Image (cartoon, rainbow, N blue to C red; front, side, top):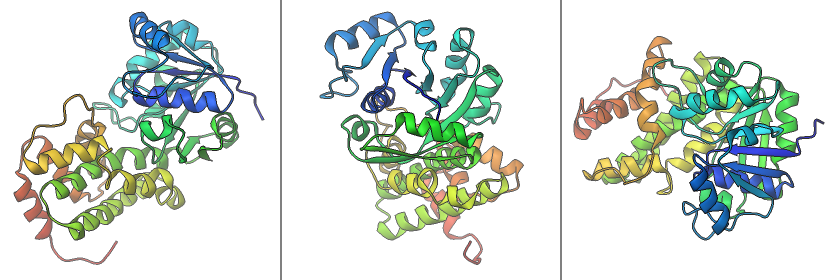
Length: 326
């Protein structure tokens, strides 16, 4: 097993800070890299991130605003939003050692290019080794050390296995796979589908409608996954069905909360980034290119861009031709 003794996390938001805690609990020396020296100094001084109130930083976590210093770590987690990943990796790339594993920790598809997160990493930092971390977990739970299981994927399964060993602990259990595309599709699609589930709750459509949206949404996720070569066991695993179940039923999910606000006719929650809002148009474009039918995802994209009302979208879904399950 390759020894990864030092781990850097790029992005000192709630999720990045939680992952820094994960690495520290796994016994690694950790560098948490903030966007600015001022932010880094404030977090380091308080030993607490205001985005995760009540959670004290582990003693093994060093906070910095120096990207070059963070780039010297054995493994680097990129915990920026999906649409900012390219910019973060581009800034990091000149400082990297050849072969450094870069693990994308955002769930999405890049707008404009239709590239998944590991594809962006491979393009911008070709001498690195790209991986993806995804699965059901909220920053507040992970930061507090509550039991969490996720999936870590890399094309080289030995690398994925070594990274799991470096990050795993008694309360954070990563499973490894080489099915990178399956993990990325599950993470991206579930964010869009969680918006649909939130709309259902916000509109008071009932538990039956929410269950139907979740299961039919999973059928869409699975169809797209199969079209792009994902494995069935990945799609029904933690990074697919598991993550979908969590985010389609919990107010902690920013995507669910966005959908719920839309369903109630309220403005989106302030200060909360919902990756699904950015992913929806890209997801449906990708599905169309692959000739994959994704009516729920299409409805979400149409609602978000103001092309249809929620009532019209619901009516359209209910009046689709009857068909066999699948």
